Amino acid sequence: MSEWLVTHVPAWLLLILLVACTAGVAILVQTFVRRRFPGLRGEEHNDVTKFAFGVVGFVFAFFIGFVVSAMWGQISHADTVVRTEGAAGAQLARDSHIFDAPDRDRIRQHLLEYEQAAIREWDEANEGRMYPEADQALNRLYGAYESVRPSTDAQKTLLSTSFSNLNDLSKARTERVLQARTDTGPPWSLWAVIFVTSGLLLGCAIIYGVEKPANHYAMVAIIGTLVGAQLFLVVELSHPYVGAVSTVSDPLQQVISILEANRT
Image (tube, rainbow, N blue to C red):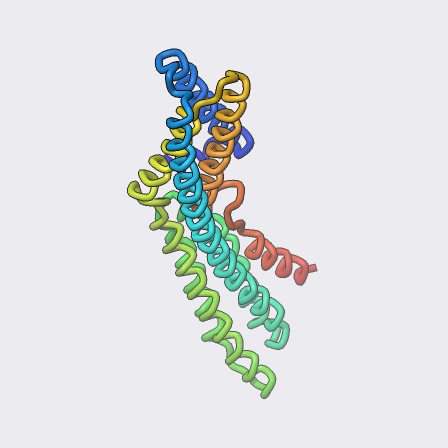
């Protein structure tokens, strides 16, 4: 569900919807509670609610902070993987100049084909689908390097370095694809805890005894907005390769730019 939301709903609209729904439902419940239970305004009741409010607020803040930190770490790791793949590809493109013209042209052509296939594979992997064309392009790139017959010490050195970079590219791509294909977002148990703690926080605000309705409605609306914004943040950070704050394929695009610049 979270993946569908971040894929099909613009981030700004999703934020508005979550904030409006959370705050709106909280205010509706508050209106019912104030009319149905007018006695929830005594000092003794407020003392108990104040204590519960403080505990629940602390737990909510700590838990959401932990979840957001973990999810941001996941996105940062995905960024590192993609940058590693892009950096290895860029180095292969730059080092290819040392080889003889037939080998150089063949390597650059197969590297370009691989990068183009990897970008097409990006959305396929996010949908959980295989993209055999990328595997085939990578195999052809390996074959292009294996067919090189170095004639100078510089070529021998850079050929060895290129194989190392090619292995780094292949490993990073494997990790990226596996993570994208198996990404299902947070488990239901985590969502259950998020909703329970959010509900408890809003519940404490709703039953808190405030004499002036305007002040009470404002308090519940503010907390509802806060909870909705935190839910938006969790949803957007749930998938490292999908959404407004996800990892992008720019490092792979940069390799294509380098290769196309070398053609001219």
